[in-house]
Image 1: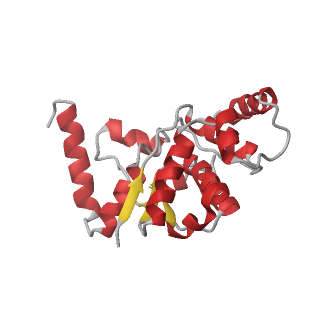
Image 2 (image 1 turned 135 degrees about the horizontal axis):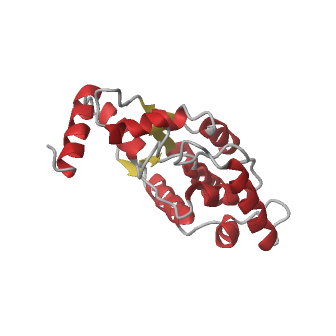
Length: 208
């Protein structure tokens, strides 16, 4: 069975996804993650409410294309279209990313709900353990698609730049969770994967 992993890097990230979800009638408030240790929830909420008001959105928007055009980003329907197309031809689709992927799921549910039966979400441990966000809750609002995450961690023996993940920085990355989960499915030991990541990191810094 063929499978497809789709990563994401949405301009304005979680704030844009939050606005789209709110426009579609979901409850994303206080649930979106942040690439920073301090999640600026109040600022995000203010921005999204201003955007909804400026767009004239006062209730749930029925058409996801309209919602994306008014307060979202073209990346949301683009990823959803790729996922729907792959699901239609029988592929298993993994949406690799953080809370932004809830926006993609919401688009899929409104545009082609049948495709959700072949869709899952993969992310990292850092995103799942983020107490300022709620990826599980966001996904459950939209659909009961499976959620998988990697147990990769960077302890004290790893370079300080990588340990930043443990301090709450970044948490995900463009398809990072999907790549890690795929590696686990392929039987690649986590320690081996970690050694490779550290080695590549040091080479990039010219220290390997």
